[in-house]
Every structure is written in structure tokens, then in C-alpha cells.
Length: 242
Image (cartoon, rainbow, N blue to C red; front, side):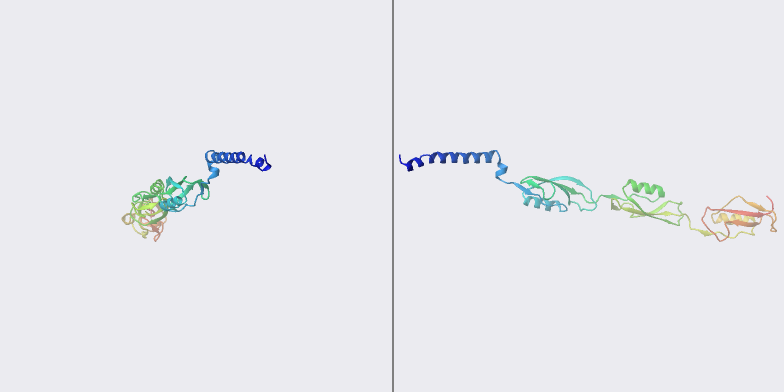
């Protein structure tokens, strides 16, 4: 046997051994560690703030699916906009995986409750129960009882976001009038005039030193010309003795 034949003799064994090793490696790579052979992870795009259909399309383009998550009211995002996503942007996700998207329901709207006829305290409590804020409260002269709500802005039934301020006006009672001067008048005539204007006359006192006729009005409190509302009490001092 020549040296050439001797060197060629092991070659078939080497080829067979090498081929077997390669075959075994391919089998292990394909069936035991397939992820190491074929990279399937993709980077999750940022879809927060996009309309839900646009976000779905962008994720699909990246090879990812979409699952609708929580839906909640949000005053800063229009209805249908994506509020949050899971996984977060730039995370690695297996291709074909799903991204959960939380979606805005837009602003929560409620009807403004009816406030007219309520007291100021009742109106405030009613607005708080509806999730609304108390806006400006404006008192105005009115024949309605003191503190009664006369109007609201926005009006009852209007649809407004939560929270929103609702302003209202309340009665400050009848307009103030100037107290007439009844000094020098007889008590009966003075009392009738004050009653005609809506004032009440309180307990009277007497001035025994006055030179005016008996039961004539010597002084009054508040003084003539002072502003007062109907129902206020005027006290009188009369000449003479009780």
C-alpha cells in the first residue's frame, strides 16, 4: 500500500463524522433552540395618543396584534384616543404578539341639575353631588326670600363636562329703601306709614322732657334716610309717659 492510499483511507470516515455532527447541530437548533436560530422579536412602536384604529394599523404593520384594555373617561383626551399601552414603547415583543391598549371614553358629561328655588346651601350640595363645582354666587335684589336661587349658568338641563363650574344668582331680598322721617308725627300715623313700606315697629321708649305733644315721635332708629329692607325693625321714641 502506497502512502497516497494510506492517507485517502480515513477521508470517508471524516466526511461521515463531519456530516453527522452538522446534521445533529441542525436538529438541535431547529427543535430544541429554535428561537436562537430565527430572531422573531420586534420593537413595540409608540401608539399612545393615537386614535385606536390608527394605533391598530401601526401595530399590525410592525407585526403585532391589538387587544382593547380599559376604557375610561379623560377630559384631556378625545374619545377613542389611546391613553396607555402594554408593553410600553420600544419594548421587545415576539412577532405576532398582542399589545393591550387603554382607550379614552372622552369627557364625562352630566346634566346641570335644577337649582332655582333652592337655598344657597342646598344648591351647593346639589352641585357637589353631581360632581360639579360651585362657580360665582351673585346676590341680587329680589322679592324672593333671602338666599333663594333665582337662576343658574349654565341653565338646568345643559350638558357639561365633569368637573365644570356652575354659577348662580341668589335673592338678596327686596331692594333697599330709604327710611322716611316720622319725627314729629303722631305715633299712630308714623306706625301706619312704616308698616305701609314693609317695616316693623319695635318696642317704643319715652322722653318725658320733650316739648312735643304726647305720643308724638321724638326720635327714630335707624335715622331717617338710612337704607333698609322690608321687614327691618324701626324703633321709636315718643313724647310723654307710657
